[in-house]
Length: 312
Image (cartoon, rainbow, N blue to C red; front, side, top):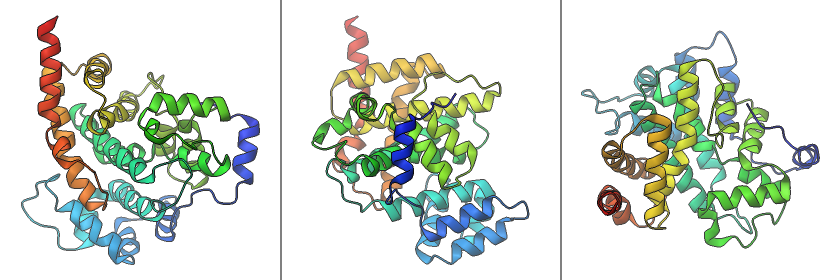
């Protein structure tokens, strides 16, 4: 169930004149997604209007993520490969990151923001594969945008994140800070913002519930999707935040609790996510910082978790 937004905060958000907005090509794609007569050929033509976006989508189609025997050499082939919804999600992901990432803030480190967002998106997609979700591409966009509410709060309540520095890496701290000053955290705000963009409901709902540990949906696939988004941020923090043992141990416990992923499976999973995160970062032109540490995350997780297990 989505969280209700505090009425006074909702007024501030609606009165804010510079909330993040989707770029022109994303707006056209969103408009197209709401038309019953839309088809993949029409979507391919819209994507082709933006050469940079087309190149990005072709790059991901031919990446090791898909291990295709035949290379896609046109945007039409890539769109046919991903299908309507898959292409929509990937195109919006590239378009939104490209348009918003350069914004300045008194508190938010936007480089780190997008780095964690991309790691979360990669983790959500990987979890979808593990959990046999019907189309893991549908998890990438909500994984990527699950923290977008931070950018709206940063505009609507200037100074809310002022001086947080490295505490931005502590997601619990961010939620407490937001609830103190705004009575809501950024998950609810993100769902609201994406709804104003007219992003498809399945994405806005997942973003709005991204901090919810449980899901009341009756459909098994909906439950899997919500779990994948909820857990993706914890996996992203394992890859990006250098805080020692507790991150791996706690996250491995959450994987076991929510998705029945045993420790011996968690270790290669975190290595798999780190590998594809680095590949995706190059496609999104995002600086990941310490590449060697991310490349070594599987070994670090194994060393930490197996030594902990041996000491029990």
